[in-house]
Image (tube, rainbow, N blue to C red):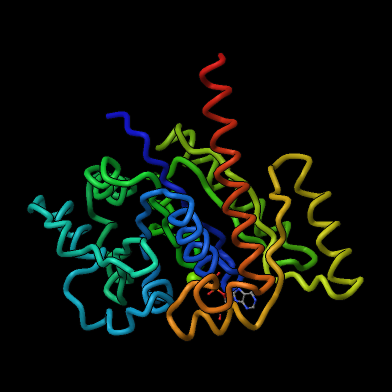
Length: 273
Ligand code: ADP
Ligand code: MG
């Protein structure tokens, strides 16, 4: 069934590139823009849950795992039990370490790539945007996330030579598009953890942009490296709430606005066609 909900998956098989930080701050940024937003923690490490102040998820029964098991075992899911409201106006479904077992369990399950997609079906009607934070691998969890995606947002750390990893990621997205989910498109690359104070940092960003721009959208906004981002993670708040005048907060606000604008242009051009 058609809905206006946009499912945006934040993926990159490399760890520490800012996936979780981007999911949280773009998600809360979109809520500030008036969107109804659901965040899904799809990493067994549960960093997104912790970043939003949910630190005991390993002892929680109601996580994304419960919903996935509901689909697999064909038992009804009570979504209200799973959704936690964060006071910065977003909802979140937490994850916990059990999600690591799920990957193994899936081997013998029918339609194993589409379990998350089926899980999200009733939620698509309730939200404008669903953001999914992926683990740092291209295993079955990330494949499930991509299979449910309308868009993929790829955070890339401002460093030389991320090219090999990107080729693999784009290849996986292509395969998912051909074999499972024809809807999926790449929203763009967000350059993160950039050191814009130095010439080396700036030239790294320029080189990345030149390399990607030929075949993939790169957002104008670059997320700078900033201690406020790391601190915000520790205190369980967004960068806006923790340090609203910081460069990182301004950058995430700008990135969010770019994402909103790109959606509007897309809609317009599809009406005009
Ligand atoms: P991933 O989810 O890709 O593994 P994270 O978002 O968890 O990456 O970021 C990795 C670490 O870097 C975290 O400790 C986070 O707080 C920190 N971090 C993320 N973005 C920034 C930034 N812009 N400046 C400084 N530290 C950051
Ligand atoms: Mg993460």
